[in-house]
Length: 231
Image (cartoon, rainbow, N blue to C red; front, side, top):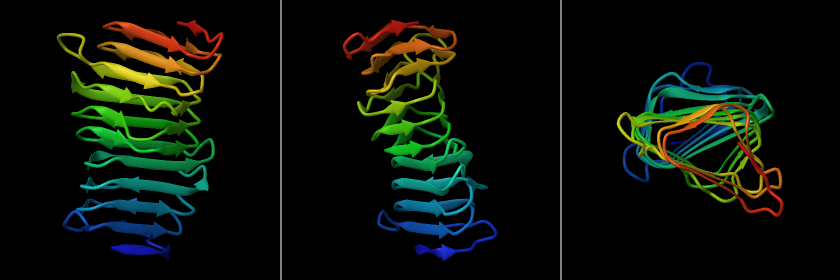
């Protein structure tokens, strides 16, 4: 399915393909509301002048790429979606926020979010498959017992504070690794039921803006000359 003209879909859009090469591309010249869809291959979705949202579960066997081109347009994909492949989110403008929920694990592809990022993996782990450049705040949650977060790409850039939540009901296995690249890393109020490993390659180093509760061990590293750690 290739619908890449400046289309005008006023209602919801459902896309359904089968097979690993059954890719789907959709462009809406305004906002885009994705209805329940099953794509056997990759999904590329673009809203040119408006927001993007889901009104049903998105089941994407391949990779997913979601883009809002207008300044301050949001991406809100908060149903119990099933993204098997990596998910890229791209917005512009300080109010161009992105929210994504995966009912299993969530693998974030290289993404640029002009506003805030809220990412949730409901029953699995969270990882990154490319550099994340988040201008606003970042909120990361794994809901399942023992699920981990590993955003360890060395070129990540989290400009705003990062809030982290993992859960381990009977131990400290829900570990978190965050690499802030060459950007200062600010940890907002967080609860990590495992080990926390954080790195920054910026002289401003690693700081906190709220209480950080770590059930396991803390490993904090700044590898820039005169970099500081202030937790």
